[in-house]
Length: 250
Image (cartoon, rainbow, N blue to C red):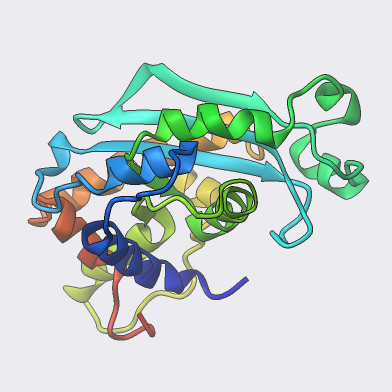
């Protein structure tokens, strides 16, 4: 995988695609319906008026060319609040045998996914759940690379949803805090999801579970967004800017 800092470029490219693309003229597919909904996104919306979908995946490995998704978890944020009744969580049966090392990480066993649906059965419902919303993840490039690869394979195109990475937002917020005291960015801070959540005193969820990680990321996203709003970040367009840095190759 490339550097996580490329996510700010992914956001910019995606917004360019969303607002510059023409409506699809081919047969409707789950991903084309989602992408058509993305075209209506308004960058000038106040953050409290935006709808976000926070999601996470569990995988058989880290290579989207050969590894697979084995679980998807997602929650909805409206008015900068988690909507408890809008969740998506499913186990997925991969085509390949489940590697033992991946089970040690996410604790998903062959028995648990024995009767689970294949990804081709899951994707239509997940894309309908996304419904053109803004996507949020922690190091979201990894999850999006797998989702995009699957959609391209099954439908011929990737989801066009703009993405926000809570890791980049946390780095930007930390830079803003430190800029009042020094110019040196503190490299000692850990930006893993668990470490950030613990340091900020957020509710703790078991790690390496797609639904729990989505909830953990949602709490982190709301915390960071509220902090950035207090610093003057009020719109969707402005929230994009903190994820960009002239000092760190963005």
